[in-house]
Length: 479
Image (cartoon, rainbow, N blue to C red):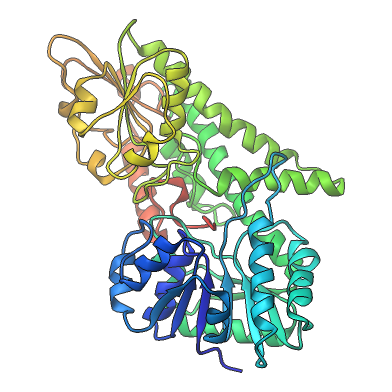
């Protein structure tokens, strides 16, 4: 059976771009959501969420993309349904199935009135075992059909990053398919072959292996990020050491590779932090060890404590801290577990006044910030009102600055550069530049400075692999 018509449940940060991409690629697609505002926006050709390129893709998909509040209509008009609804973390770290099970119940009720075979694809991240033990029984009981007969079931999470969802969806590293039966998996693989631009490899397996693989990918990546951050902390205490020099050499080893080796501050966002905790929860539930995942999570949380302590050491009494960057990564307005936001909260909690600026995430940050934190209207306002400025998100706007933009008349200003954006630039009088991850300059010790040539290798590696300054850019931000 060829899948020709598509429905996507959940018009959030992943579901809306997925629906738009399917329609753009020529498949009649209907989106389903409980929010009338999102449904209305899509039907008017307006992006319901912030994501680069989404407005253009929706415009290109006009005539093939619609949205509805009604499950029965969506199921009747489609051959395959993707479930892309939230699975929020519970207090113990496990993922809640509340929204997934309600969606499965609604889909099953609609399938009861449909004679033709229908494929259901769960894209939301769930705990291993959840699809077979919870979701499939709900679909069967509400539809009155058996999986493999009246409908097929796959678990196929997307490995995407907010801010580059459309690119990552169309040009994935690989497609992960957990299948209830080979027919269901073959149908889904055929659909992705028609949609993806890069002929990706397929990893097809049973459902529980796919569920575990999703968690394993993210926890492995966060471990690699944390290792690079540990190296950055070491380099700061070793005269002449430079984290980019060390990690560029590590990246040349084929067993390691260069991606996610940009030592800086901790990882954040809606997926990486919670996936580590979910992995640990799973291990505890089945009596297996999860020490590595737990330590990775602990070290990541300690990064903010260390950064806040470093800022306070350099801050004159009674002065203000400026923070450039509140989004957890560039090209996104998401502030969940953002390092810049958590730094602002940590400092404000100690009574230190903070002013922050972000080109996209200011309004989202305003909803959660409290204490003595002001939001600047511009980069310049943030800089000029602060004695210490911390660059926490490597936005392009911040990369275009020079250290001369931080000059303060009549007093010193400290610039803490978490991403080494201004390394090698001329340093004007009155600006104290502190790039994270670099020890005392070897040239100042009368030693030769070798790191420039090695950094060229690092940058070449980054360009050839698609790696960037931000940790969570290329892989695995599944919602």
